[in-house]
Image (cartoon, rainbow, N blue to C red; front, top):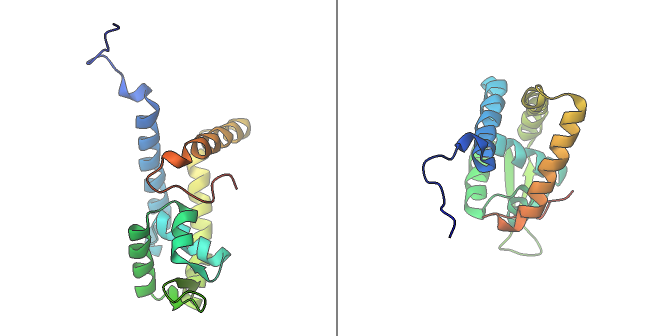
Length: 159
């Protein structure tokens, strides 16, 4: 039987550790760029998705952005409290809540888009164009192929 090393593993060479670190860096860059907007990456994802699909229900939103339903509810609560989102009961299903951006939410999204784009540029800045393309293709492959292993799989994977 092959002995498994217990003390000589370099965690910096493990993909899970590197992905976790990149996520920390990505969030840090986004929050630094967001400055006074007070928008988190997840809040931006909600605003953008609702802006793209007005009337989307909360469950579909959660599946599209790969966030569990309870966390999605909390994010929606906070955005609604800020006056950026409205929840309305669906005429087809009284249990479902349809989401739309308010005028203030539309403005918040317009303000957040350049912030998000700058953050993405900053994250990828160390890579040249070919490396960026390769990195994004490989990243999408890993996300798509491992989607079902997620605690909150996305219905939008592979778009």
